[in-house]
Structures are given as C-alpha cells and as structure tokens.
Image (cartoon, rainbow, N blue to C red; front, side, top):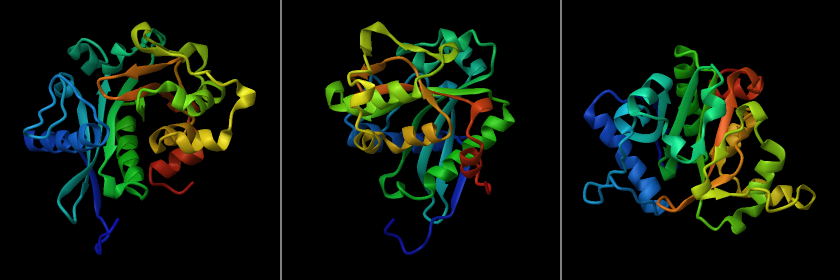
Length: 254
C-alpha cells in the first residue's frame, strides 16, 4: 500500500443501509469495473453491484479505520437464511445435494473481495479472522462457495483447473457437481502432464488460501458468462481443517 499511515483494520457485520451500500460499491469496483461482470441488478449510475440474495446474507465488512473506508467484503449465508431466500446462491451453478443431505451445519461464502490497494498484505488475514469468529459463533461445520478465475476460456485455465481436479478433488460424500448448463471438465490435462509451478501461479490467492486450510473442490468448473468468470466450488470441512494454517487465519500463533 502506498500510504504513510499503516491501516487500522476492524471487521464487523453490516448493520445499516449505508454499510450495505459500501459493500456493494466495493463489489462494483472489483466485479464490474475490474472483472467485467454484469447482472440484472447492477446499477452503473450509482456504481453498485447487487443481486436479489443480498437481503438474505450477512455481510462482513473489513474497514480501514484510518481512512474510514470499507476495503474488504465477505457475504455469508447460513441454512436458515438460505431457506428464507429459497436456496443457496451457488445452487444455480452446483448441485449441492451431497452437502444438503449431510446433516451438518453449512455456511455459504461469496462475493469475497478486497480493494486493489490492500491486496497482498494483511487485509485478507484480518477478514478471515473475522470470518473465523462468525464460524465459531454459529457453530458451522462446513464452509462452501464458488470462487472464480477471470475469463471464460477454459483451455487457458487447463493447468490450474487440472491441478485442482487431480490434487484437491472433494471426497465423494462432499463432491458437489457443476450443473450441466455451465459444466466444464477440469481434467483437460492429465495428472502426469501437470506443470505444478505454472498451475499454482495461475490459481487466485483466495483459492490458494482455501487449499492451505484443507479445502477441496467440487466436480467440474462452471462457466459464468454474465460475470466473465470460470467458477469452482470450494468446500472446507472445519473438522478436517489444517490446524496450523487455521490458527494463522484466526490471528493466533501456530
């Protein structure tokens, strides 16, 4: 960050309309301006990225108190909120039956983003620490949600998608599957032909963070043309979480 004053981070849930607008404004900067996404409820005049699910989610906000600015967002949905909404958001892209039938407490994560000047530092760790507190408070067993690669040319993503499929595929009891209308095979490269270094360099930091915690992916990617992304469904069983990495994300000493 090009700032003389180091950021003073805080994480809280959105409580007011202005909190939610700040989250939607940051999402517009990232998902619309940077990534070229569109959507039925995107407001270009007010520069807001929003959808019909927003009223049903909780919205975690990372704020830089030194600048009085929302610089990070995570929206999260518990099962009771999904029932009120009629479904989980990612059910449009993935068949969630293995998770829904597990009998375990679920939390869907989505719309995670950071202001561009806060990437690569401690901001993501602070946001994850806030998320860890939410998970503990609500006694969540399984986290899941779609995470994105920029662009819809799956061939250009063959190495990272292949790495995820061959090395990080979910066990069958949690293996959700991309829906047919957007389904993209991930094993376009045979395991023995993987270039591990190139693949890891191409995997976005958020996905790498899930993998370090012990996260796995569902079967198949989903091509989301409205958001100009190729999505994978990440799943994290808190009982199988990598303890050392989990402590780091909670802001503790491992």
